[in-house]
Length: 257
Image (spheres, one colour):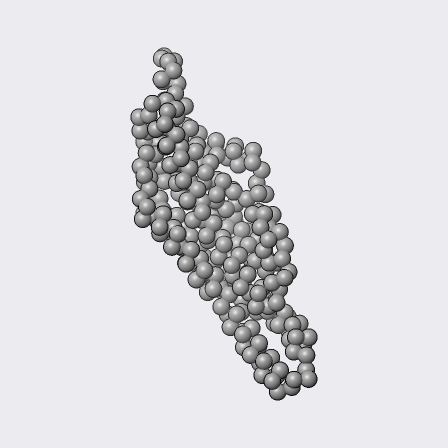
């Protein structure tokens, strides 16, 4: 057996370059990239996925050891992995945005808390929706589907193939889809609360002596909570729709049919 430096470097790169894409995806993707997941566990999972995927990959491009061309491939694989992870984050942020819309209309915009998964401050309604979406995602094996698509991406977008700028632009434009999907989920609650606020406005004009803020705030809060509870009848259907759209964005980014 030949144990020359060139052969060892080639064998090392066969695992190192796929590990870069897998690690970047794990860092940016939901569930895996959460701050609640230990960094050692995330690294161990990335090594395990790479060890299973790398032996069956197509032939890697010829590079000169760890020279400039190799590090350009490292940057390329990092961008591909992080862009794909960001695509799935858009689907999760739909629930966060919907909760923000509802909380602002209910008067709970000031009731914020720290999101332990991202380290950001979000409203309590957004945190509730995010926990619900995360639970449904894990129960529905969405994390396993992400790993499956990650493995398929090495065949549809092999190492060394540059991702077209048009695909990255489509990812940027998916931000408009995120805002639209969040508005679709929150629209029934927003419409109902808008009618209530219009009624309070009419009451304020007809009876100026009445303190509308004192009377209206608890009513708006209780009605908003009731509408959120009543809206759970359609939440599963909305979740399936926007999560399917999120996976379609991921497939489009990796050219997976």
